[in-house]
Structures are given as structure tokens and as C-alpha cells.
Length: 492
Picture (cartoon, rainbow, N blue to C red):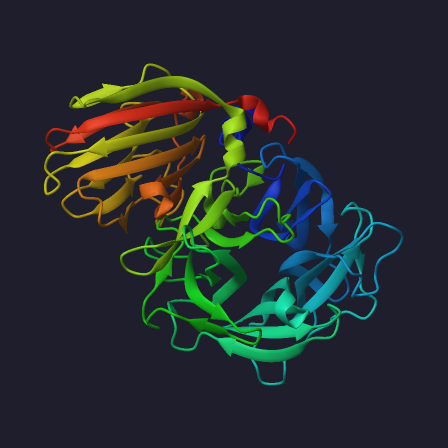
């Protein structure tokens, strides 16, 4: 009986989303690209000891798990942080011809639970890591409080220095350095800005071009908040504006909150450093979970999973400049077309004629009356277990309803969630990634995104998908369904 239970729980493991082989994972850390490899590190709780887990990939689809990169030591536990390639050996840590990969991370110290920043480096393409001999390299000032963590570091060319964005309770502090070892405070941002429903965590700061506007760029600051997200619990907000090398300047009203994801399960998203200029993309991955119920999820021997990798872009909208997100293009290399239907008058219900465990489903809908009704996709494991994903034309709302999706591992788990998607004028496009126990929905070319976990009791049968016109009139629809190859998970 116990072995059967384990097999059933293991079956919740995603096929193309990253998971650890066992134990608990959460925040992605140390994302850096070097010599053809994407390094993905993450918080890794092994018997209540916090490490950095580690995986590498050459295509963002197939991941090879490596031994943990960083382990707890006499100073403390290894909390979140980032990594860079020290191309010019500014730290003096390079040994031999390989460039040094340098990681900055938060120590949660053993003695008084002080949070400080440590440094580690690798001179063999990330296969082995060494702690800096004089750690920690940055400690909080007296009286600043205990929240002093999650350093995101990058090279800032205009001032020829390294910049660190650091989460400090209700704001982001900025530091600069010439060598990644000595750090000097330069400014802060956040008081009275955005959402303060919870403590600020896991910042990221990067520059992006505005699509379709030659040589125009904006800076984006992302911040995770551990309470107060639209779906409840943890979530991610972002700000658009300028960075002057010392602090961030928000171009939106301070009370306005922009959310990266309106689902219940997307947190601590950060982007890769050192993506080659000829590539030029800004790639993000997040933790698909919520601190409200992390430890209650019904999976074994692993607990926790990451989102699929997303490419971020900026677009000018009727409101202002906003982030758009799409699954990274490499996903197309792992798909098999299962069903395709061109524009046609949608019947009340259309069921696709196959079952699956992992799917990339794209659809477009047009209605003759944009003030009436809904279009809806239903993902079913049985007649009684299903998730509803739809768009309400009248209310201009995207929604995901997982109240009937299966197991309810925690009182905060089951629910229905909404995201505003306006200005559609009777047209909506959706892209839905389904992977055993995770659903990611991208609406209106990625203007709004919703990520949610689900745990059907009948997962072993696979899933069916159907398309519905729910009270909407004269709906014209078209869709493509691409199955994701199971073999993508083999290298894990």
C-alpha cells in the first residue's frame, strides 16, 4: 500500500518543468549563462539545512542535475542570491584560463540569525564552488533590522561597476562595487511605492528595449512580496522606470501595483545574467508555489517545482509601458502537433480527440457581441475533476478556476482567480501550458499571465481538453494543440 502511494505521488512530477530529484525547492538562484550552459540554482531544503541546488542546460528544455553548489557552513544557512561571470577578473579570484563565476548569496547566520551577504566562486564552469576566505562581504548596519537579503548583482557599464539590489524589509537598497568584494551603499527605493502587503524579497533589476521603438529602453525592477498578491498569499510585482546607477525612479504613480502573474503559484522570479548580446533576450524563471501551503503539497519524494522559462519584453500600451511574457521559443523544439482547427464557428462544446499529460495549447476567439458571455477551456482528468480557464468578454477578465481540480491539500489551495485583460474589443488569444500538475496561462500575447498548480486524483489517466462558448454569441475560434514530448524529462 505504501509503495503504491509513493508511485501515485511521484506521478505529480512535471515532465518539462524543473524539479529536484527529492527534498524541497523554492526560489531560483544564481542564474547565469557561461560557455553554452544555462546554470539554474535554487533554494534546496535538505533535512532543514538550506543549500543551493544546481542544474545546467544547453537548450532550456533538458536539464542535468548537478550536486548542490553551495552548502551551509559555520557562518550560516545559504539563502537566495545571484551569480555573474567575472569577465575581467575584477575580483582577482580567477585561477587559470576559465573565467570565474562569482555568486553573491545571503547567509542566515547561526549565532543571532543576522542576515549578511557571502561570496563564493567557481573556476571550473560551475562544477565546484569555493567560499571566499573573508566571508561575509557585506553586513547590515546596526539597527537596520533583520531583513537584509537576496542580492541580485549585475555589471553596470555606464559607471563601470557592479550593482547589487538587496531586499531590506519594505524597500530595495542599492550598492556598488569595483571588485564584487567591497560594497558601498548608493541609494534605495520603495517607501510608499507599490504593494506592501508583505515583506519585500528577491529583487531583480534589468534594462529592456521598448518593442517597435528604436533605441528606446526602460529599466524594470521586480520585487516579490510574501503577502498581499491578487490571488492571495505570495506574489510578484514590478516597476518600470529609470536607473541612474544609484537608485531606481518609478515612472508610474507610486500607489499603482503592476503584477507579473495573477495566479496563485508564481513567486521569486529572477532573470539570467550574461546572456550573450547576439541573443539579447531577458529570460526569467520563478518558483511555482505559494508560501501559504508549500509544505502541504501532496508530492513525494520531491516537493516544489519551477515555472517554465519565460522571455520578457516591454510594449507601449494605452496605459503606459508594460511587461509582456511568453514561453521561451526553445519549447517549440519539443512539441508534436496533435490537433489543429482553423477559424470556424464555435459550437457550444468541442472536445479534442486525445488525452495527454503535457500540452502547449494556443487558441484565438472572436465574438460578435463583446458585451456578452464567455469563452472557456476546460481541462479534465475525469467528469468530476477539471480546471476552467476562460475569458469574460463583458467584464474583461481572464480567469482560472481550480475549485474542482482534485485534491485540496490546504485550506488556502482551492479557488478561482482573475486577471484584468482590457481593450480586447471582442477578441482574445490564449496560450496554455499544461504539465501534469502545473498550468501556465498567457493571455493577449502575454500581457496577463496566470500560474496555478493542481493535483487531480485521477492524474494517471492523463487529461482531456475541451473548448466552450458559454453564453457568448457568434464565436469564431481557431486553435492548435501541441503535445510536449515525455522524453524532455529523461536527462533529469
